[in-house]
Amino acid sequence: MKMDEMLRLLEEAAEKKAIRVSYENFGGELGAGGLCKVKGEWRLIIDKRSTPSERVAMVAGALAGFPLDDLFLAPEVRDLIEKVKAARALRRAS
Image (cartoon, rainbow, N blue to C red; front, side, top):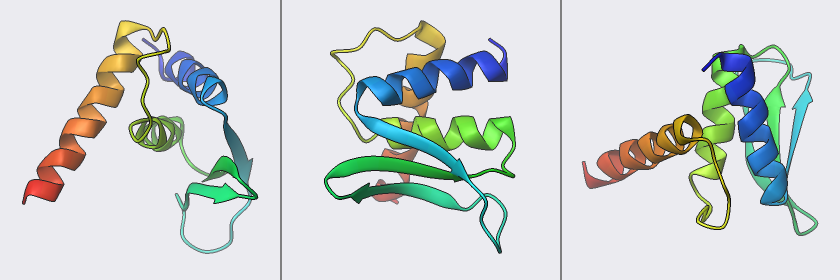
């Protein structure tokens, strides 16, 4: 699956989980951003200068922290999110 399509599907999944994804101009370090809660709303803020693969990684990483059993996700999208979850579990176990 192409990176742009993967990003679109991840952004749609985030929207369904009530995570607002926005791309903002940041000063300083490239690739900055993250997931936060603002006034009770989940927001994922990503640096506009980030590459499509960085954007995919950030959205997948945010979604990995939420239950997704209630969503239909393309197999490639679900696999990516599961890989992110597994990598986090390995880091915590180390």
